Image (cartoon, rainbow, N blue to C red):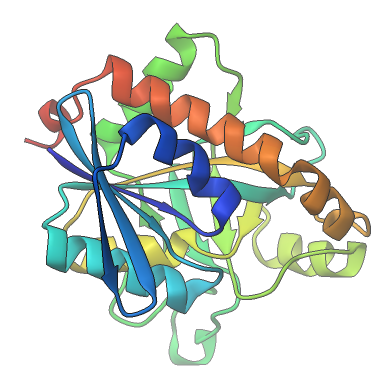
Length: 236
């Protein structure tokens, strides 16, 4: 199976480089893809860069050039729920944009025309994630992650987001864009995030302090999934 792994920044991909023992790299534009293996799976690891457009380009490259069967987006997010602390794992079941508004044309807040209200994670892969996390006693939260091109910080920003997306539990800058590309090309997507900050006034300093922890936490669950499941059986 060909598995694409997308992280936005160096901290989110550097640990993966160690386990895939990459023998080859391929440069496409300003992107570098690390090609290796893990357990019988061919792994294509890419640093997308930050933001929706960068993440979309990375997903497109993986799908259309390397014929990826599944994409895994691993990395960090900011908490929108007081119960969810730094280092906690998020396994979203759906994703949407927080900075899209075409409600005047009859669409839901966050919805792109000709696309669903939310991008839902493949239900079979989602169940595998949940079962694996439970089996290995990994504490996690599940729900809606929202995506936009701003680093969320401060009470006012959070209140505006929670007013529009009351069920959102975390926020970040890439996942929904990857989900939109995967939806367009019928490619299953897994998203695993860990909390780097609380989206509050200390978010910037906490992100810098905790990005390595969050990256490691999300990596650990991805590794458990790759080591202990046969993902291809869930998408046949």
